[in-house]
Image (cartoon, rainbow, N blue to C red):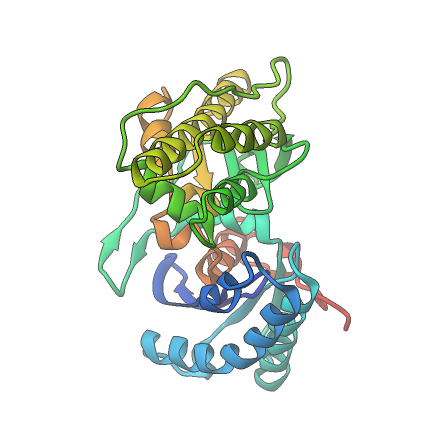
Length: 336
């Protein structure tokens, strides 16, 4: 079985191909950072237009890199939400066209659930890298990105249970805001991560742990950082590095403590960290260092939005449903 995964939920146009052993055969990601960086954030209309421009070339490159033909594809998976509606329409309609023209099954995939299944990719055939994958359940999964910060428990039947989520802003959005205050550009997360590595110092800074709850809150930490940054103007490289290190350490501290606590409370056998913020170097290090449980984090290119996680979701759920596509949500996907 060969699965094509299509992801266009936000500003990344990505198509990937995975085989039945969940080995990654091809992974094409076309970034729109240059388009949106001048605006300081993602412009939905521009994002959908860029997907229209990018998707056909990305598909052809994906097929070529995997050394397969269109007829070799067994099933097509596509993100059908959540996401920017204009961006989703482009990917879904492209997938529908492929499905109709090839008579291949089409599977609608939830974007957030798919992020978790990036951890089941066993090998990247393009780089020959192998990855450790989860084997024991239940798992506590932290999905942390620009739009979401969700704690979910995953059982052996791939059922998700929501344990906690942000009550206001997502962690990735908080990183972007911090970077904007420091004039570091967009996307802000990688810039904060980079500058924080230049300093071992940090200011005193509050944490919002919401004791007694597994929910998150980052809006107050954003306000605290606004006040802290105003006090330290004018900026120089040392101040920026210290400010970035302060904010990153606080965000990571909250995510790490609450995820580990939830995993222990629900007697989980491991932790999965995924989503765009899972590419943050300090979060990756701290979660592994502090967790008493095995921690599974996809490699960085599989943390951000990508078609590989969509295809991986289809492969693993196909196996779990006893090789029956009807049990993994084959449907019309989106009726536009």
